[in-house]
Structure formats: C-alpha cells, structure tokens
Amino acid sequence: MFRADLAEAGIPAIDADGRILDFHGQRNTFISSLARAGVSPTMAQKLARHSDVNLTLGTYTHLQAKELAQAVEGLPSLVSDERASGPKCDPDSPPVDPDLQRVILSWPSLSVEVRKRIVATLEEG
Image (cartoon, rainbow, N blue to C red; front, side, top):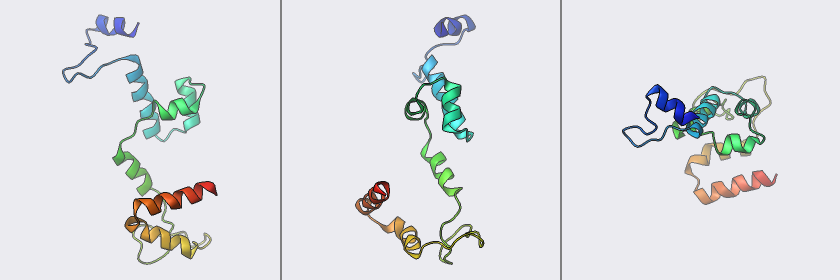
C-alpha cells in the first residue's frame, strides 16, 4: 500500500543516494523524532502502537552521538568543587559524596576497563 501511494504521488522509492523510502524507514524517522522531542518512552511506545517498549527503543529509535552528548551536557552538575566547569549544585540540595566527586572528576582520565568495572559495580547495586 505504501509503495502504491509513493508511485501514485510520483515519489521514487529509492533516491539518488540509494536510500530506500519504505514504511519502516518512516517509523524510524517518526519514533526517533519523538525521542529527540523528549517524549517519554512509554508515550512513544503507545504512539508507535508497539506491544513492547524494547521494540520502540531498541529497533526504531536512532539518535546520533551529537544528540546524546547534548543530552548529557544538559544534566545538572554533580560536582560542587570549584575545579568543575558548568553549573554548580543547588545549595539547598544535599552535599555530593566526596568519593563520587573524585570519580566524576577523574572519569575522563580512567581507562575503558576501569570505567566498565565501575559501571558493572553500580549495576550490581
């Protein structure tokens, strides 16, 4: 049905760069756009009419590294130390654990293996 609609509208199913315009590609674009707009995973799942949010997030949501970096940059700082750049913690919030501050400040210099061990430890939680 989608291909017939494309043909009737005079829209080629394959563009000059070899990219294919199909139903699933449109779903990818729609659901990824929902994620970029900050729509919750549950709402995106419902709008996509998926029975499983893992299908929505794992198969149809595609974000670029730049978008992921912007999302992380938008998080409030966990570091109250003067050495940290960016926004400071809310003075009314509880103090950040000093060990956590050290991990945050040293994270860029840690090896991939050490980072993986830290993440694994946190996931075991």
